[in-house]
Amino acid sequence: MAKSIIPASMRLFYEEFHFSPAVLDKGILRCSGVIGVDATTMKASVDPVTQFEQAFLSLGEVLKEAGGDYTNILEMTTFHIGLNEHLKAFMSVKDKYIEEPYPAWTAIGVSELAFPDALLEIRVNARIG
Image (cartoon, rainbow, N blue to C red; front, side, top):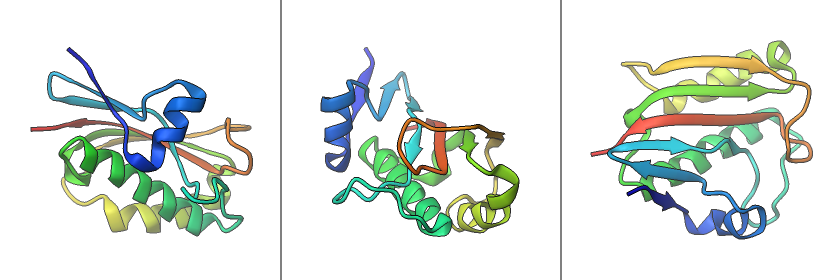
């Protein structure tokens, strides 16, 4: 049976927007899109690098809550506002968290995201255990 993964810092998203930050089923963790929002202010920084760092920290919380870490990621899809404008900065942040062997990765440019001022959403699938 699938289990919802809800870090304490993301409980508000679960309660207000009615979705699980991730679901663990038969050793595969399927994460919802993670954005770079400060958990206390619920706001996205205007600085792209700060936003990207926060998104990876939040993703790390989800992975840890499920019993894993960044090395468990099999596949990553990122959705970007201003993909080409911010790609170099994003990759410099990503490379601090994602190491070899690298997961499969698809980067997609989009016109908007569901959260105000968000520039990035990260969605991953990971093998846990």
